[in-house]
Image 1 (cartoon, rainbow, N blue to C red):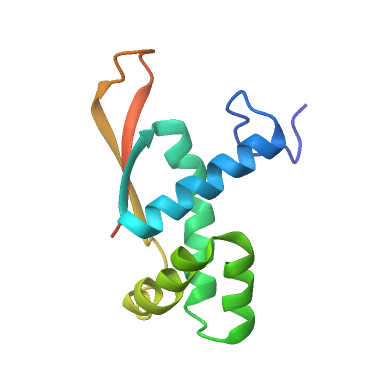
Image 2: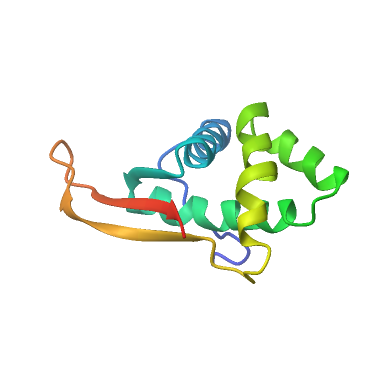
Length: 116
């Protein structure tokens, strides 16, 4: 049974998976819209939502926690530019739009993840 085993492994070991998620979240924050596979988009969505909720507090401990999870420039952009946009919003900061076409190389379903 898979009790307390949430999340997708994506055929990677733990360190590779964490690095992949970190780079995807960094790119999402910098470009505010990225195209990736549907599984990866669904996996990073709750992580990004939690970071935005933390950044909305606008205090030093939340900034330090975000800096520990992201690179410096994306963390600062998230804290100073993106989070203030959503001060009135209670949740649902990102959306995943499923792509029409599958990737030609391996047929995986593609999706676009972006800020609302």
